[in-house]
Amino acid sequence: MIKSWLRRFKPAYSAYNFFQKSGLKGLNEKYKSVGLNKKYYQSVSAKDFEGLPEKKNWLDERNSKDLLPGDRIFELFSEEHKTELLNWSDNGYSILKTFFSEDQIDRVNDDVTALVENKTADWRYGRKIMFAHKQSESIKDLAQNGPLKQVMQMLIGQEIQLFQSINFLEGSEQKTHSDSIHMSTYPKGNLIAAWVALEDIDSEQGPLHYYPGSHHLPYIMNEDYSHGGKGMLLGKRPYDFYENKIEAIVTSKNLKKEVFRAKKGDVFIWHANLLHGGEFHANKDLSRKSMVFHYYSTEAICYHEITQRPAILD
Image (cartoon, rainbow, N blue to C red; front, side, top):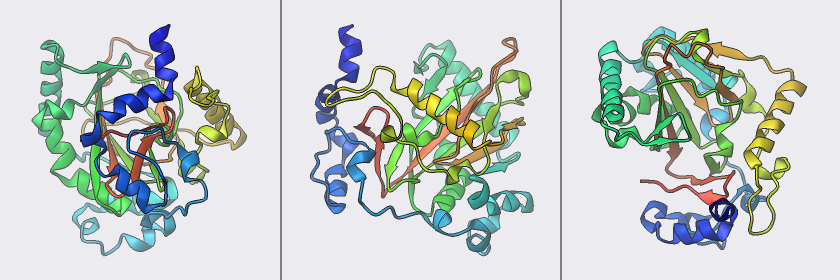
């Protein structure tokens, strides 16, 4: 009971953050640069940035079909991948088939298997292995040292840094959401993510679903639904209320859902505000090995809207 209450008590997060200064380095200066009188350890939400200018990144402000041709990084990709990337601004995602080789994926799977067998995997939230890139050179290499980071940096138009990796052995079954409620930025849109298929994934394995073009919808932040928070307390079940809000938007807008039936090595890159989630994992005899990377712009103020706390970065 006390632990649950403390997780809702904003000053408890502030006390913890006070001792995380290295992971919140530069945040005081970023606040000051936009005119906020706020300290690195304090609670923060989208409400703090109301009235401040929202500078869009280059492919939100203009269209990828106009801007990407001729880009040095863009020219390195196959014609199939170029077509996907050209549609980024319209769709809010790009599917890059066979982006990683079978050998690269096998090395990742071997590392994840070893982490699980050695009981060193950082399991959280039931189904997620968090931050495996800190333990696996193969995962770190895919995230940091190759074309994936290059293409994502091109799409967001700024230097980016890896915030987290997540590995799955089964389907997440997460309801439809935008990552911006979890990994929020000022200005908005300065997060980008990639999902990597570590095996072939079909309809019975809880594949990824998404809503093309939904990134154009307004960002849904705490003040846009009844999150239940008040004063120094967060709401009791804010994420449940958020999911209900998103479900209502999907219904009212009559959005069309797509399901990504992936092949091993395929990559799905998505915009910070794209609505997406995980389908029901119907056949539990089959695994759903996959991996997600989330990157923040190094220039943005990064925080977690749902818990109203700054993002602690390596």
